[in-house]
Structure formats: C-alpha cells, structure tokens
Length: 404
Image (cartoon, rainbow, N blue to C red; front, side, top):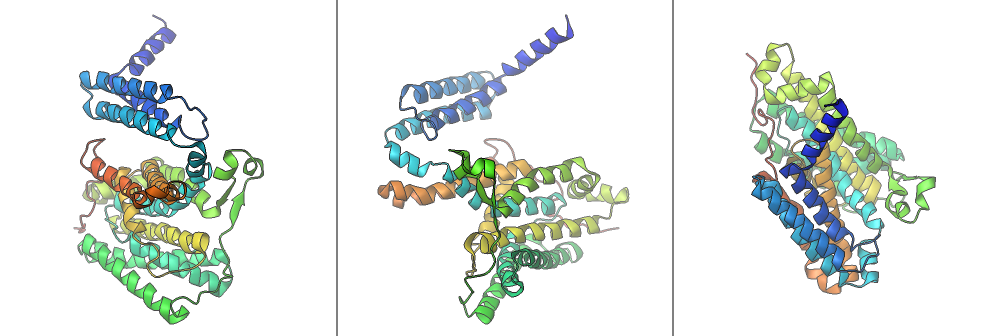
C-alpha cells in the first residue's frame, strides 16, 4: 500500500469516527438555525428542518457507538437548530435584519472585550497557581484611574498607562497576601474587590463630586479599515472598531504562544501544576507567581479602561457591574485556555448584545430579553458539571506554596 493510500484511509477513518460524526452534527445544528438569519435570505422551512434532522441522526449514531456527551450535544443542537430556525422563519424579515444585522457582531465584540482582558489576566494568575477572584476590583480600578489619568494628562494613552499601573498595584496587594502571607486566596480576592469598590467610590465623590466628569476627555480612537468599512457585511461588523478591541483579539494568540510555546510559559504552568518540582529544578516559584498575578492585574485594568475611556467616555460608581466575575466564569468555561476563554467571552458578549436588541424589534420580548444574559452562566455550570467536557484547573491552583 502506498503512503498516499494509507494516509487517505487514515483520514477517512477519522472522518467516520463517532466523535467526528457528533461534531459534524453540532455544526449542522448551528447551520440549521444560521441559514434562517441574516445575511442569508432563505425563507424555506425545508433547510432548517432537514439539517436539524441530519444533526440529530448524527448524534444518535454517535451515542449508539459509545460517544455519549458529544453525541447528545449533537442531538440537542439538531433539535434546537431546527426549532430556532423555524421560529426565525416565522418572524418578519425586517425584524430579523434589525436584530441580526452585521452590527450585532460589532456589539458582541464591544461587550466581549473587557471580559477577554479579564479572562486572559485571570488565566496567567491561575496558571501560576494563584486564584484571582479579585479581577472585578482590578477592572474597577482600571476604569476609574483610566478616566482620571486621561482627564489630568489630556491623553487617552497616558490614561491607559495609569490604569494599568493602578491594576498592577492592586494585583501586587493581592499577590502579597496570597503568596507571601499565604492567606486564603478567595477571601483575599473578595477583600480586594470591596477595597476597590470603596476606594473608587470615595475618589469619585472626592475628585468629581459624584458625576462632574468633563465631557471632552480624550477617548481611545476607532480603527477604520479603508478596504473593509465600505463592504456590505464586513463594514458594519469590522470596519470601525475601537483600538482596544483589536488589542484584545491580538492578545489571544499571543497569550497562547507565551503560555504554551515559550520557556516563560512552561515556568508559569510548572508553578501552577507542581510548584515543588519547579522549585527543585531552580525555578523561583514566588517570583513567577508575583509576576503572573501582576500581569493579571494589568490585563484586567485594561478591560476596565476600555469601559471608561473607550466605550462610555465617563465613569460611574461600580461601573464594571460584575464583569470581573463574568470574566472568571469565561475563564472556567474556556478550561483555562486563551482560545476557549475568548470563545466564552464572545458567547457572553453575544447574549448581552442580543438581549439589548430584541426589545427594539419585538416589544413583547422586553420582559424575556434578560433571560439571554443568563445563558452563558447556565452553560458554565453545564461545563463545570462535565456534561460537555470536563474542566480541569491547574493542579496547584489556590494552594499556597511554602519554600523549604
């Protein structure tokens, strides 16, 4: 048998594996719903029903051959895809275009950006073995000091740098208690969150009297792509996005390379998996954990600065509104990996964007729209329960290390 023929047989066998069939079924279930939404114009019930049926049959075939979790996922995707596709076809085209226009992608990215920064920051901290539930407080510090720095220096760039410095200082406090004093990291993180909430609230009223922030503070600029912004679909989606949105997207593959393709990343992961062994081969566990937690604070503060300097253009007390905790949920849902965390952040962002848009097209959905914002939390619980794949944190995550 030639090498080409052997490769062909191996590839064919992989394509017909039960798990592969189930994955294709999930993709068909998504496609069954997607074909009924813009930018597609199909108004035929046959395609959603047919694709949903094929997806469900693929799931049943996978379950019958011993692939339970992914197989049942394909069955659920087929049923939901067909059902949602049929419901979408019963709606008016104008309403669908209003809700699912290309600009919903831009809105999704706006809502996902602070979560992406927070999740990537949390990943560095937890991969080194320190639970960082203080992402909310670090993000809030970045939001306030970003707008304050931009106001006093008349520069959005210096405002971002000041925000990053504030996040680093708050992270250093958390690292000192978690690493040096070996305090309970959950309790310490919550203390940091309350400290940030009180400190930013006090400074907000002390410096701005609770709302007198100038309206002409420099904002983070938009990045306009000339050859994209005038395109029919790509223009509203990607043609004009905030600079920090692109920074967040770029940081996802960069974080992957740093963590999984460099010696620095190997040291970080070693300290999070087996700090005693890392110490034995000469890695300074304390230094690695301090650096990782401070990096976490800097990235979380960038997410807060995006909210105040890039998105809203002002600051409100407790304006992060739990986004740090949502970023932590995205990190868990993404299994402590950058691309998984980014995908979870996009899911969170899409559900938020959809919840804001539904009432505009369907007034009756006003009381139900907020239910879409609970979807990511439900999926996170499902992921933690191991239904769609077991989430495995670093082995030494949350365990203080004492050098001997």
